[in-house]
Image 1 (cartoon, one colour):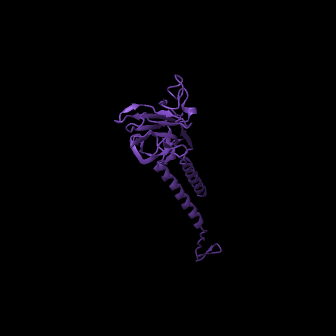
Image 2 (tube, one colour; image 1 turned 135 degrees about the vertical axis):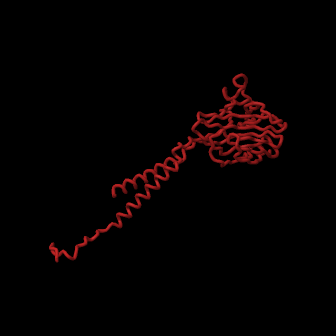
Image 3 (cartoon, rainbow, N blue to C red; image 1 turned 120 degrees about the vertical axis):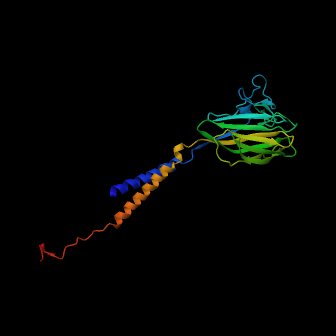
Length: 258
């Protein structure tokens, strides 16, 4: 019984430790989607280069700009009627040495745009924050971030992109919606006819925990049973006492009395 109790107790501890370890979150890698000149204005990322000089404005970004081996990044640019106009955004350094992405329309009817983050199989992605502002703006531009996991609504966040005389801090919108296997779609809907600039879109990607990290009901039952059997065995050992041997009153000194 002692060996049984010891084995069951050891099994229970090992099983619990293994499941807790398997459930631990995977390490997340941070991805910052930035549109600075060093990355944006180069062949392969800028569709105008090397055909022409890389100017500070109206350069077409690659449709997969910023993608990593674990995370595919694509874009959609919609016209004023809501129709898809192109699958990439424009880039500018605004003549100020700070890069940003923006929709094709400039000071016309508001145009929606979309950032699409698709992790490869076995990975998931989380959106952390986005910086926005209005170049040479006088008043902030109002818009709404709508986040989808594939086609399922996750959250809706109104924001006001800061007017940008040089030196004014950018608007930073933070997100805390968790991880998704995607594709994670960030849809932007401006409500004013202003060109909103985007930069430093911060994401986190990580490997999805193995299926075994979520214990099956039968595994939980086996672990709990192991604890129960071990506890019962230990209690019986504590209660065990020496039972005195009963001697017949007819027997004295080994001789049966008449």
